[in-house]
Image 1: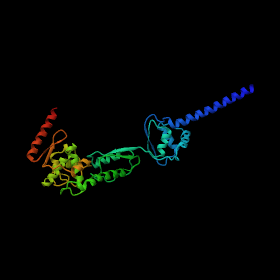
Image 2 (image 1 turned 90 degrees about the horizontal axis):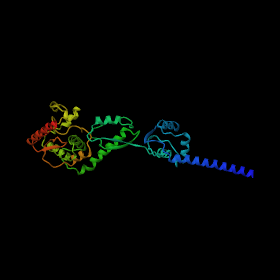
Image 3 (image 1 turned 30 degrees about the horizontal axis):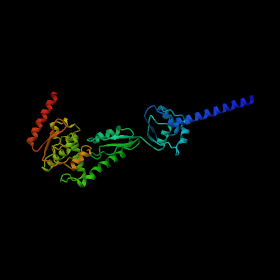
Image 4 (image 1 turned 30 degrees about the vertical axis):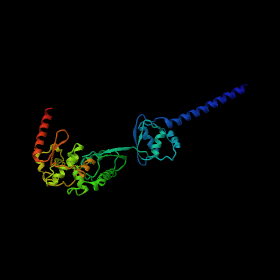
Length: 325
């Protein structure tokens, strides 16, 4: 009887030990698949040629606590052989260790956003490229008008040149898709001419519904052998804002001074958006030769100089009244 009790106690102890082991192993495996290892969303960067031990130290410094044992055991539950890929990865708050390993192994990298705003010029674009995190390499020559304003996705480690190439391709697509269908005229002879006039329209027009009307004004002036007389081209050459121009600036001797020289300036003055480009390709049919600000973000248009002078007086009156308010 005593021996039976001893055997029972031994078996009970044995089963308790076995059950405890299975319980602990189950909890351990469950934690690999379900336990969140970060208290908030965060980005991690895996550098080229880094080894796993260094990477685990990096995670711990990022307050993502992962033991070496847990890391190596977790790799057995990955379908494919685990390879530590380089790049930037998003660790979400809800991610488990297995989620992270899968992201890295499947190279599910995090994509950042780069936005080029309509009307940005090459100097501004260069500064933005320099300040954008994750882009590498030299900045190639940034020709005005060449790149499409839009939001683009890029990965950490992408080159500035590769991002710019995407932007150039997208700008070309717009003109190419409309070139044969455009309203033809004798002044827009090339796709480069489109970008030149579109860049001026982009800087002149604040309201998208006015762009085709502004385009018609410039094309009508060209047709009447008139100078474009656009403040924004002068401002570009002098690196000034249009509202800071002085009378003397309008007499400056540079080929962007459309008060001094007839025709289009030699190059675009910024990166025009799609609406400005379409305004050049499909301008409105008007008799307008002048426009001036209406003080509300739009313009008043006129067919002759006497009407234009009246509109200037209205603009000055609006400025005066605005100053009183």
